[in-house]
Length: 613
Image (tube, rainbow, N blue to C red; front, side, top):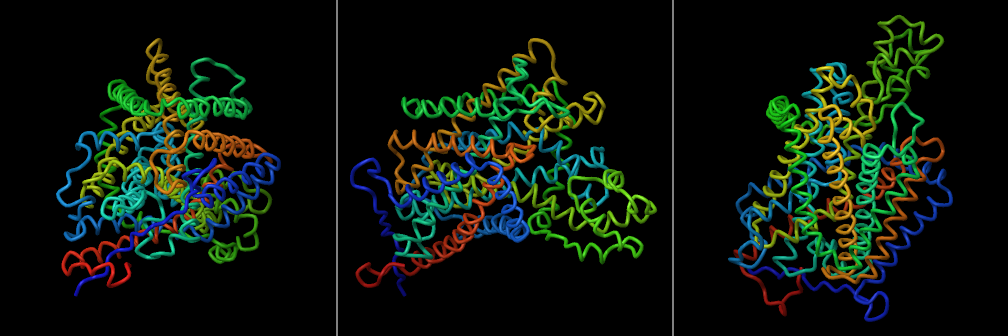
């Protein structure tokens, strides 16, 4: 029996003339209004904004931490099933017999450009080192922090955060957009991915909401990425010039100060806006090639002067460990531990002091030594074995706090970033099969990320393990760890040259990321158009600058030690609704692939006979 044709009659009403000509007014105005309100709030009431965002963020994590963990695990398994099944894996995203638009070499090169960005510059050393000191295995007390035994667990979670799960998030969005664009000739916009579920309703309010959620998620995801990159750029400039005015010198180690961050942000975003206005946007291709060359030079520097043998042995063992623990990492979610459940797990003599013990025992960023040294009064007088039992009673709370503050942060970040990266992956993948797309966009980039993390991060860990760094790298801020590692590894003019090169690399990554992010926002608001007006790029460049700048300032108010906190809180809040949209994308894609399989076998009814579905 013939099957009804798919619904492809997507109609996004656009302004016929004026400033918003070619744009969907509801999407553009709602997105701008939302961001304008956020900017005004953070600018005029920064302490309130920082406090409320942090409070709402933590409340959401308490309720939705498990949802974030499980749905990302589902994304990875869902894509694996689609790639393995013959009827879905071999389906071509394009016309029958259509060849891929780009060669395999060009395709992979562009993909690596999407993956090797600002995030990897910041976290190539910071992520493995941070996880070496704190991860679930350390929290359980199975190994000591910053020890040789903690290296395996550190890379297990490094690979989790930058591996197949991370790229699966991007590919769920990218595959959904690419499939409908190249098999049904639909625009590359978020609502297209839900047409099998929502049908004609995507042409109304529901479709506008879906696209707005995509724009807001993209803005906040790009904002966090640029925020981290700007911070590392300031650290790099300080390493080169020694200019104290850019830094906050009040802590144990210098950190980028508010003035330095804002000045660097305005300069970098100004360059991005000039690039858009002047038409130099075409030069993004050449900047991407430059990024790739400079990245390879940096990688080779670590291969030659770093701990390459340690890195390669770590790569092999860590990859095997990651794969062996894949399912438990995918679906092992923790919930918050209440004060009552903590008290119930305490030894009898510690129960009266439960309120004094609870905060320290459930602190994910502490240790047994810190817990014991922080006790006062009657709690400090408890026998050591009772203190140990109290600390063990808080394990569930520590595991939840760690997972919510680390893994769930990453999942929210990648989800918020997925309209940006997913749209890019979709654009370059016409003519690929579903299996090629999944394997090429999940496995290949992840393996490159693993190599990057083990070669750069492994060198930093080895320098600390052998005592050569004497704690200097661990003690540095996250965005300064790369430069401190280089300082321990190199010296003289070569160190200066590589440091300058890293600052240039960060700068070009930031400019291309901001420019591309603005393009994606405009693409969604224009109903999938790839060529958008310059004036709108300027407006969104300014809005993006204000969002990042005001939230960086808000993060430092009210006693805030980390200027990124308000940005990260806003991003996690904004990513949650889009996570639900991505879940619906999976359901929608499943229906589309199944119904298209039926159409291949049984034919399609004439459009005039039955309404499309």
